[in-house]
Image (cartoon, rainbow, N blue to C red; front, side):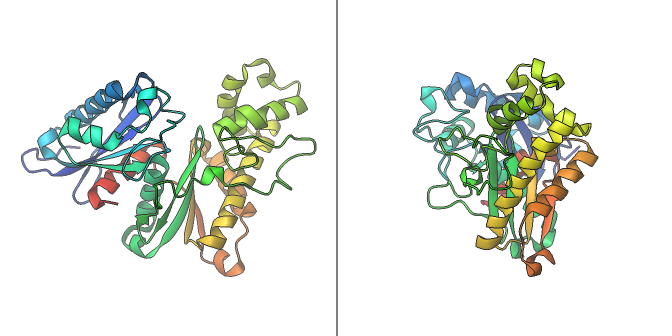
Length: 340
């Protein structure tokens, strides 16, 4: 989208993932200058130094795409998976994405700011998507509303937004929704093992409602119930990524698996209704990057399994995070503009 490079003032959102970076640009009015995904390799498995250079390249790439340069940029929003502090210091234990020893206790935000010479704001990727959903959905009323978002990906991320601001907590790890343990009665089928999470817990939201949960817990069980299913002959990691395509086609086994995911998210929202009493509950991530029929079915099942009080159900909205995988980068740009 063309702009006047002589006068334009913008913020840039950089969404840093395990495989790719996605970048976007937003002007001071809140208008996004990039319409779709603009991805480039993130190289995070190769350590911080190379990852920082990859982010610098992503910045220059998105600026070139919009006809701007670094002199037009007032601030940058960096989003990444956690665990990390509110100021962007990676956990001393690293994480799934940040396995290289150099990441442990690495000041990601500060290092990128020093490399670019531009102010950088850090935000957890789940929080970034949650912020974008909240601000987009509520518009001018955003600062008077609250929301809870569940972002289904490799894990289960999310965020809580209160009065238009992300709740980050004392150490930056508020709203680690994936590791909230659930009552499993009614979710698991007869004989189904209690699902285990990579964090070491059992029966938490992520152990069910995530790609990892599908691969490690749900799909091995359901393939045992459907021994003639085509995915039986496929390596489990590949099958986990393909099962959503079967759900799109209404496959019975896939639908039973995704029903369990919808129930888990619904119960998460039930808990949220008791401690937050939010105006809206959003679902995002790969599970809704599907056909409109499947997406509508899944969202309907989430809403049905969420136990809201009658007063809440009269006003609460359960909705999809808009713009899919672009939400992280766009939320990061919003955070940089507002200092959230």
